[in-house]
Image 1 (cartoon, rainbow, N blue to C red):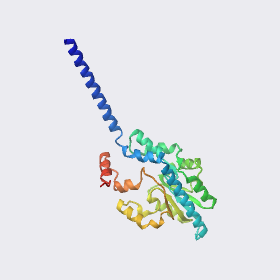
Image 2 (cartoon, helix red, strand yellow):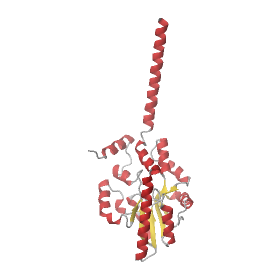
Image 3 (tube, helix red, strand yellow):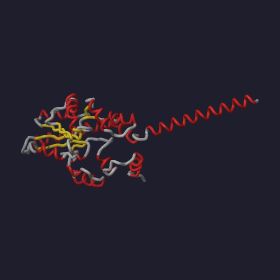
Image 4 (cartoon, rainbow, N blue to C red):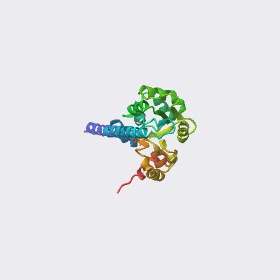
Length: 271
């Protein structure tokens, strides 16, 4: 009888020990996915949704229609040019966001540089065909991106690999001192007339969207509604952008992860 009691108690202790271990593992798994949990749906959508691909084709089809119209009217006083962003406009960096989810880490310049050095980002559906069409119509293309200027070589190689025209140091203008793109657009305008702009972030189109709150960004979007689909062609990007950093997080970069999560939840509208 005594032996049976000892065996029973031993079994209970083993069970409790296993249960504690399982609970600990579950808690570790919960903590492990906290940082990037909010990004999973967006990355899944960009990498898998046919609707994403349809939207990018739609954007570039519209860009070509507008370009044909502009060429037919031919009111430019200088050689015509298109200005485009790179990331999430012509090159797909969702694998970088996928790596953030896999490692459960926030953005770091080192991890981003690791991705850029691979020179292997795929093209956004519709992009290569459109920009080569523009080249065939004697329209130059300038790539204005906030990638660091130190990454010019890798960026040009990636663009060339995917078949983009004008992939050279004259036409690829990356960030030096400031992320504000207006200065670089002004450089292009000295010699060319910008007839179309393409991007996934509203600051790719106009400086009025720089450092703006969500309210101001929405008001400015309303004020410029006639430009969208005519001179401004917007590509979808649910993963990141000024809408989050300057809008949702109010341009502040020192929020803790817990604070970010709380802010995201507070900005959701329900009923």
